[in-house]
Each structure stands twice: as C-alpha cells, then as structure tokens.
Image (tube, rainbow, N blue to C red; front, side, top):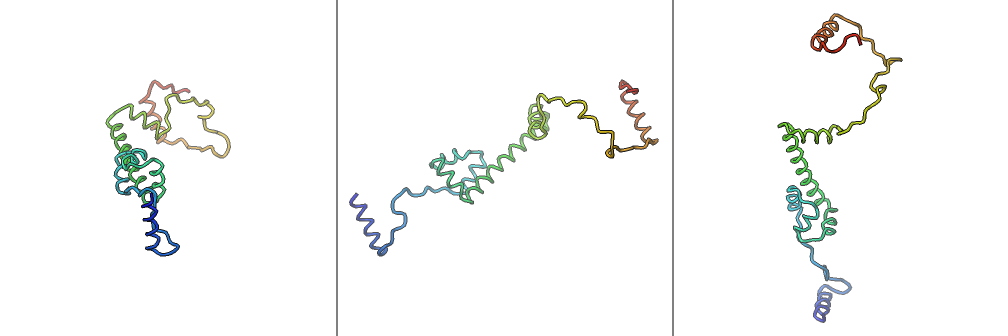
Length: 159
C-alpha cells in the first residue's frame, strides 16, 4: 500500500502541482470492439451472451450500447438476423409448409384461430344516401352474370 501511495505521489510530482495522473485506480476498460459486437449480433447472440463473450457484466454491455457506434453495430447485426429468419420462414411457407403459412398469416395478416363472427349488419353496405353507387345493367354485365351462373349452377338465382 505504501508503494502505491509513493507511486501516486511521484506521478503527481512528475506532472506538476495540482494535477492528477490519468486513470489512477479503477479497473482498466475491457477491449470491446463494435465490429465484434456486430458479428456476434449477426449470429443471433443476445446482449447478455455478447457480454459473456467479452467477459463483462450485462450492465457494462448495456452502458457500452448507449454509445452510438456500439448501438449501431448491435442494431445492424440484429436486423440482419431478423431479415434472415424472415426470409427462411417465407421460403418454408412457399414450399407448402402449412404450419408456417398459418403462423405467417397470423403475424402479417392478423388472422386468428378463432375469429369472432361479425354481425350480418356490419357486412351489408349502407344502401341509402349519397354513398349508393348505381351501376347500369349492360349487355357485358348480362354475359358475365350468365357465365357465373353457368359455372356455379348450385347457387340459387332467385335470392
């Protein structure tokens, strides 16, 4: 302990009066590079796992992530993982994997396992007022109507 005090005193004397040497005491900063943070995040590691890789605490890693270059590196790496996973899920769904199609439908289209039925009144358009659109009956519409009628004869036409 006396050697430490003497070393500090000589450091003060060497620098000059009323000045303190830089980084006296405390633990030296661990070497954490933004490039390595990016690469680890790109592999899908969490902040806690990255902290473990560098041998620092989660609190230290969170402090470092407040620095713009570390936040950017982590966010960019994490975004690359998300893009990769999303691309893989989409490819899997396009090959006919029904479970993945259902899951993606729920995530992106708001589909549900048990949809709540809507009252019939909500499905019918309001046929009064200025929103009503009049479509004149033409020969083209008559042909389309007859083609649909021929394609689906089981649908009653008098309804």
